[in-house]
Image (tube, rainbow, N blue to C red; front, side):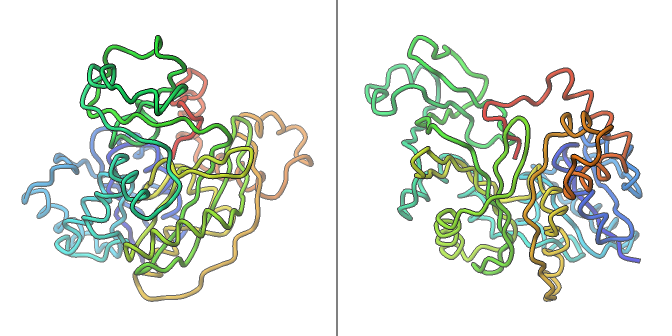
Length: 356
C-alpha cells in the first residue's frame, strides 16, 4: 500500500497534484490549511488532515507534527503543491522524516520564484526577457523619468504572487493607477503575440521530461518549440536544477520569444500532461527513487471544458485526448461542479488568460 501526503495551502493547483498523485499511489492524504478544505470533497482524497500552522512560516512544532503524521500513516512520499509548499521542502525537506518529491536548492528557488530576480537571471544568462523595472510604490513609478523606455502598453504585477493575481495591462499613461494593493511593483514591457508555457522535470541540471503548450480561451494544445527548449536548458544547467520548473513565454508574430516568468513548482494544467502520458508526479517519484521508465507523450489538443460539454451529444467529434479529459472531469463530480460554478460567475479570469 503506497501512500502520499500532499501539502496543500489552497484548492486549485493542489487539486491537480492530488489527481496526478492518485494515479501512482494507492492512497493520497491531504495536509491542508483552511483554504484547502474543499479538497476533502474529492473522491481521490483518502483523508483530509487540517493543518493549524502556516506553510510559509513553519514552526518547530509544525515540523514535528508533519514528522508524526508521516510516521503514523506510513507515508511513502511527501508532495508539494504550490510555491509555498515547494519552498517549505527546499528548507525543511530533510527534517520531515519521509522521502519527498525532488525540489531545487533554496537559493535557486528564491532566485527564480521572484519575478524581479528572475528577470535579472535572464539578463545575466543572455536569455530573451522584456525590459523590466521594479518600484516600491506607484508614486515611484509615476516619478520615473525612464518610463518612456518601457512604453505602452505595459504590464504591472507583484513580484511573488502566483496564478496571474495582480497582473494588469496598462495601455496609456492616463490609465496608470494611483495605488496598488501590493509592493514591490514589477513593471514590464508588453510583448505582443501568443502566450506559451513550457515545463520540465530535471535532475541535477539535466532535463528528463518536458511538456509545452499553447492555451487560448477555447482550447489547449501541445506544441514543440526547440528555441524555448534551448534557452531553458541553459538556465537549468546553470543552476544544476532538480525538480519541476516551468516558464511563461511570449512569442511574437515574427517568431521571437521572451521569457516572462518562471514557475519552479507544479502548475495548474499538469493534468493535461498526465493525459498525454507524462504524469510529472509519477516521473518525479521515480526520479527520487532512481527508477527509469520515462514515456514518450502523445501530441494532443483539448478544447475548453465548456466547449467539450457542448459536444456531449456529438461524441464522435471529440478526439482521444478530449474523451480522456471528459472522463477526468466526470470521475470527480463534486469538484468538477464547484469548478463549473466558479467559471460561470467569472472567478479566476486572469490578465493573460493563463493560470499556471
